Image (cartoon, rainbow over all chains, first blue to last red; front, side, top):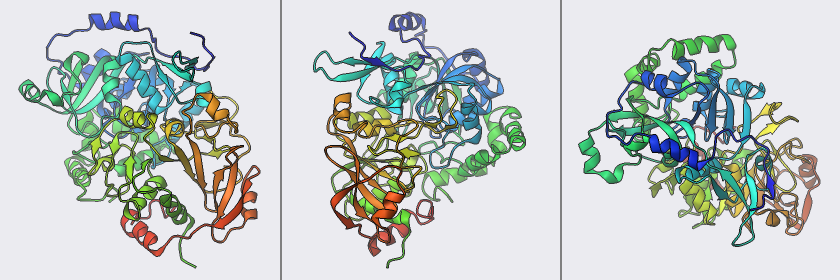
Amino acid sequence: MEVLAQGIGEIFTDPDADKAREFFRKKSRKLQSKVMTVKEAVDKLVKDGDYISIGGFGVNRIPAAVLHEIVRQGRKNLGLSGHTATHDFQILSAGHCFNRVDVAYIIGLEARGLSPNARKYMESGKVKMTEWTNYTLSVRYKAACAGVSFHPIRNMMGTDTFKYSGAKMIQCPFTGTNYLLVPALFSDVGLVHVHEADIYGNCRTKGILMSDYDLSRSSKKLIVTCERIITNDEIRRDPTSTFIPYWCVDAVCEVPFGSYPGNMYGEYFSDEEHLKEWLKVEENPEEFKKFLDKNIYGCKDHYDYIERNGGMHKMLKLRKKEWLLLGARD
Amino acid sequence: MADYNTMELMICSASRELEDGASVGVGTGAPCAAAMLAQKVGSPNLLILFEAGGAGPLVPEMPISVGDSRTTWKAVMASSMPEIMETACRGMLDYTFLGGAQIDMYGNLNSTMIGAEYQKPKVRFPGSGGANDFASFCWRMMVMTPQDPKRFTEKCSYITSPGWLTGGDSRAKSGLPLGAGPYKILTNMAVMDFEPESKRMRIIAINPGYSEKDVQDNCGFELLKAKKIVENHPPTKNELTILREQIDPYRYVIGR
């Protein structure tokens, strides 16, 4: 098939489906407990230089505890899928943890504004970028999920987003229309936060799925944090609700309020005060350093972080906001 | 003369474009306010879709994120990004609102970067997010933005999301889905559409208090003019009351 045009962006991950199959051939299907702490999970499963994909949507149902731990343990030179990345991107930028990004959405926190620190990091020239879109990255997960090395799409043509991507243009053999092909994205490690999981890694969640269905299956290793661990009997009582099966999962960590300061559907709303403070302190390097010492480096774990930011009183207030008993901005 | 600001005017104008029974993909801020207003005024059955997966909500208050819980309040489905985007790919998403740091005469948008060197940008912005996706797949893409000559530029530093590309039939030949593209540009001064042959931006209506000259003076390229340019309707009392009291009581968007 003739390639009519192609983007000049570097492809950071190997789209070879046979190599991925060799990896998955050896991945355990054993029904065994994978319960561990976040500290253990990051220590064991996230290595310097790994390429990671982060579940949720920037500040909604994000694996915040794992991201803080990655910063705390000082991981460097990570590759990153910048799919709907907002506060998650801001956290990893704080630790200068990555050196290459597949960009769809970065730096910004939607209506809240742009992160000065993340922006400075991206303008420094220290981070290699290849450009995509939110949908395109989700399609790249989907291809990997299906065990194929590419997927056709019908967007990005004619734009600089295509020029700086790693996509290739071909002609459809059925209709003659131009299509772009995007390479499968097999991540080394996926990070997902869910509502409930059993000790083996069978997961349930509520609300929207974002791209987590495909993200979790396209990742070679998967760390799951959950609001609560439930019994395997409960999973088997209602198998329709399982959206990630245990054989995709490598670690299960119970972290109540694990998406904090992000939103968790039906559980708690985002902590807008804290997010605002984070954006503000980034303007002053001294203040920002103190802020990070308080909220990441000086914390033992996620509970410690929550304690330092209002503890259970704050969590209950965020629960009221989630249930609309208080306005989102009250 | 009614008492309203330009943001209120833009939101009210935008909301009137969304007819009952149509579907719209929205982000946070002004586009969401326009969709919510349409739902409460003339289009109760407007289908609102959020890119992260929220489908058909009765949005109770302005969401802060396009993925937060407000985007699925009393929704018909809590779905996924692939689900929403594939709905657009199949041709079932009618409208969307996008924005950017720059827009050119063909409605191409830049939300990625300013500068000569891509890998070391002078100013880096968030990037496409779902904008290139919606601009490619939605039948009618609209832009709501304040008008100034820096934003309305002869040439974007970077094209993030496709408008009519280089005009004429360039978009149709590109491989992008046929028939979809920029539809209207709503600014504080005017409403523009695109001339059907050249696909160049064209003034079709002027907002109260502005002239054609104001519009052209605040645009970095030459605008075409429709044969008949009308005066845009100001917001009605009903629209303003709903917008101020029900949709944005804390003036997060309309106070900007």
